[in-house]
Image (tube, rainbow, N blue to C red; front, side):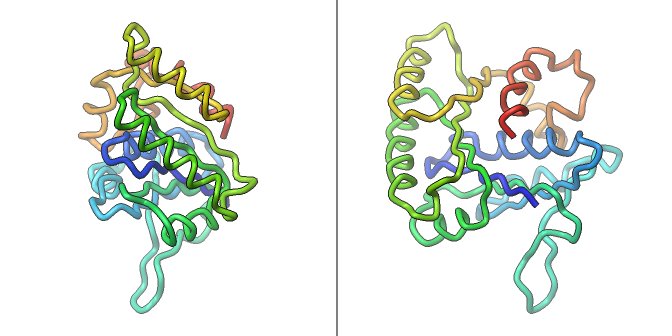
Length: 204
């Protein structure tokens, strides 16, 4: 089972948007059995799953049995973990031990960049993170703005790959309201967004 950890300690960074659409991307692969695990107290990803229509590609969640810890359902091939704001220390270490890859969503604002910078420094100091592939996904990036220029300059200082800069569009908001991802609707409806996800798909 491959485990993808979506993490950034900054609240509102776009973790749930990235995690739900990542799960949707993986689920479209015919041989994949995908679990979306929500370890955030707000349970945004879990709420998305509850809204998901039965006719769409199935994405499961934790299997919970009385007196036992939550675990992925039997046969799960890919797990996406949506994490909470303020993720640090022991909880972060525990999740890193489960992860095969880490995706960090970052928005082009001063507060997000500073929080992300501190998070990357924390990852670099943790033994559990060493050797794990880490990549950045820009969230709500308008390439025509000065903020986008500052965002790209910041990314260069991290030495980490920027997989994509996802544009600021209502597609994510409107689909999330119905438990859907970009990969659950007709491609012509979200063509620009699917193009931006191609490098993320290749990195997986």
